[in-house]
Length: 209
Image 1 (cartoon, rainbow, N blue to C red):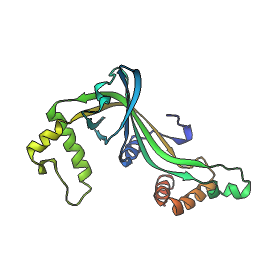
Image 2 (image 1 turned 90 degrees about the vertical axis):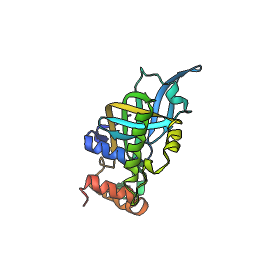
Image 3 (image 1 turned 60 degrees about the vertical axis):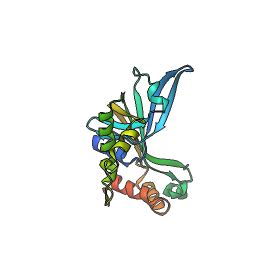
Image 4 (image 1 turned 120 degrees about the vertical axis):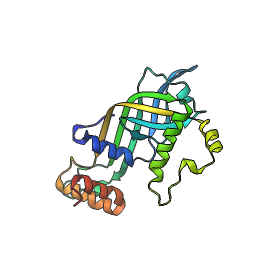
């Protein structure tokens, strides 16, 4: 990922915060099949478990079957984003020398991708994912709420995935390269057009003030 120095985010806590804010990352890996070497991507939930990312994929999805384990895989996490109109800038009124752009947060996680076919370990992954996402609900559903034979049947249809993270590359483009007047204009404009992005920009760039 191309990341200009002014937009690079390298703090581990902030990188993980961006990753947690992404509801459905994209797993990209190289595969080999009768057609040769190509890239394949799947949208699927992934979450940190120590120094690794865990998730699962449909057994019928050929991405895991044709995986080239000698080539690192990549998971793409897209955080909040939004269009930035030139009309937001004070500079537009002063010189007109402005163009549209896009603000966003993103993290690319790279590493070795491991396929898990052991049923017990797959159940552990499913349980961790479920407990994480259900913890946000007042009445959390648990895997054990479903009949054991039904869970066992469902587990046969998936395989577990573990991305052993070797590096994270993060970008946070929030107009921090603009003048204070232009930055304030972007925040004011986004407060009208994209309140969630405006709130995040204030939190990150102005300490929540």
